[in-house]
Image 1 (cartoon, rainbow over the protein chains, first blue to last red):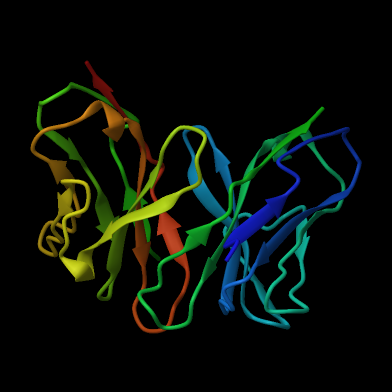
Image 2 (cartoon, chains in turn brown, purple):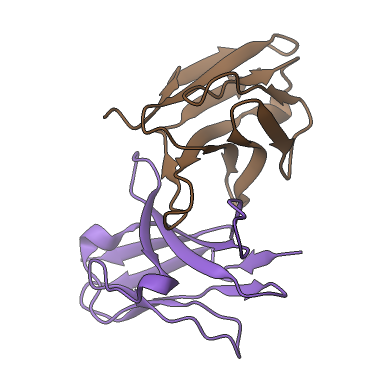
Amino acid sequence: NAGVTQTPKFQVLKTGQSMTLQCAQDMNHEYMSWYRQDPGMGLRLIHYSVGAGITDQGEVPNGYNVSRSTTEDFPLRLLSAAPSQTSVYFCASTPAGVGYEQYFGPGTRLTVT
Amino acid sequence: AQRVTQPEKLLSVFKGAPVELKCNYSYSGSPELFWYVQYSRQRLQLLLRHISRESIKGFTADLNKGETSFHLKKPFAQEEDSAMYYCALRGGGSNYKLTFGKGTLLTVNP
């Protein structure tokens, strides 16, 4: 199993550009989530999904969209990038009802200039 | 609302010294508490969870409901313990969402 994979590893965007961060997992986990990690702020939940076709907002959803058309994939879209979205983004997945451990991807480091 | 507080952003100890990373939480029900660790340039990974009452890499953590705390302890720190540590809380039932603290960066000096 590859576990949770994220692409790209690094990205530089200009203000106003849009892009999609990819996240995939091959463990058939129901729950997936996106976090951003900022110095001194810890991990903050952006969006999450409890299954294919079901998504909901987390703590800091503004400026981001998600969709969950399959169990495996959970892409995060930045609609119009802003410097405040410069961060490291982590995707995570969790199996249903088994300890609730979250398995994290390697992260995407995004810089918006 | 649920909240996790890690009062120390930075913690520095010498190799062989005891280490305690503090975590306090606020939650009205029966929470499930976790410690996650992130070594340099690696992904976050689960270190331990309170329901397992296990010791991983010499670390232990006890849930104290009276003090609403879940401090992480190790009697003799090693240089390889240097990492960012996050305390996290999951609400009860089938709630998958985790609330993370802001993290404590532990540095173990030789």
